[in-house]
Length: 108
Image (cartoon, rainbow, N blue to C red):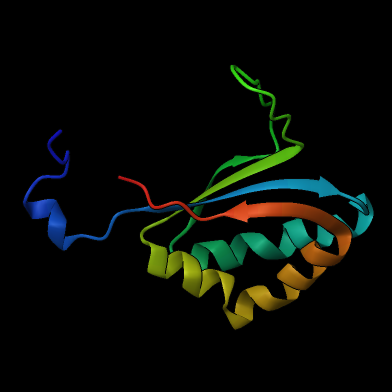
C-alpha cells in the first residue's frame, strides 16, 4: 500500500496526539490542574480535541473513564510540552489527584 503522504508533506512534521485515560481521585484539587494545563498546551502549539466528554465503546472491552485527546504539531512539540517547566506544576497536581495512562501516537 502506498504512503498517503504527498512528496511536499515529507518536509512537514506529522501531528502527534496525547491520549489520556484518567480516573480523578480528588475532583476539587483536580480543578487546579484543569485551570493550569490549558495555557501550557497552547504555548507548545497544542489544542484539546476532546476533554472528558461522553465516550461510547463501539467494540471491545475497554471502558475509559475521563478520556482526553490533545493534538500537537509534532512529536517534538508534544514531548517539549510534557517535559516543559510550564507544565511541571500542573503535571504534579494531575499525578497527585488522579491515576491514568497517557499515550503519544504520531498521526498521519
